[in-house]
Amino acid sequence: MATVTIEELAAILEPGQPIAGLDLGTKTIGLSVSDLGRRIATPRPVLKRVKFGIDAETLLSFAEQEKVVAFVLGLPINMDGSAGPRVQATRAFVRSMSERTDIPFVYWDERLSTVAAERTLIEMDVSRKKRAERIDSAAASFILQGALDRLSALGRS
Image 1 (tube, rainbow, N blue to C red):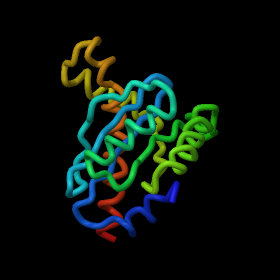
Image 2: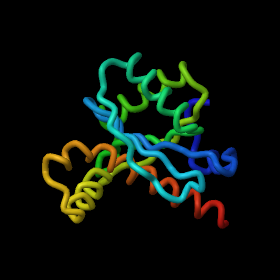
Image 3: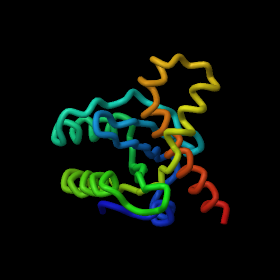
Image 4: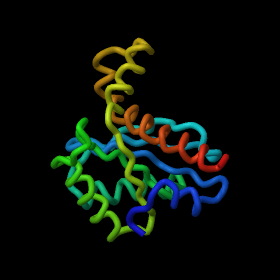
């Protein structure tokens, strides 16, 4: 299945199926998961990247443990809307993952997600050191929450 749009995902999801948010970095993968009602995104521990095979197995193990049926993956589009090298790397990651799983991926524009996540952590008075540890999962939650809000709006229309 590889990639689907958020609208296609809305059509195939069944009640009570959680989805995960991913913030793919070069050193870590930020993780978050929705509740069963798909209303709230909750951060999970960051996955430290090793090499693709190990990262893929760890991610699929996470998906199995959390019963995840889809991944919402932040697409790092440049502020001017162009696709740079990080977009290419993200798409390559999804192509490689699609060879290992049937779990669909949804690309989600992640512009300013890290900025918004950091502001939220600052407002929560999280120390600089702890912010560095939590920023990727907070960004994954911000990405996933945007997708959950869109799914909710699609369900109402």
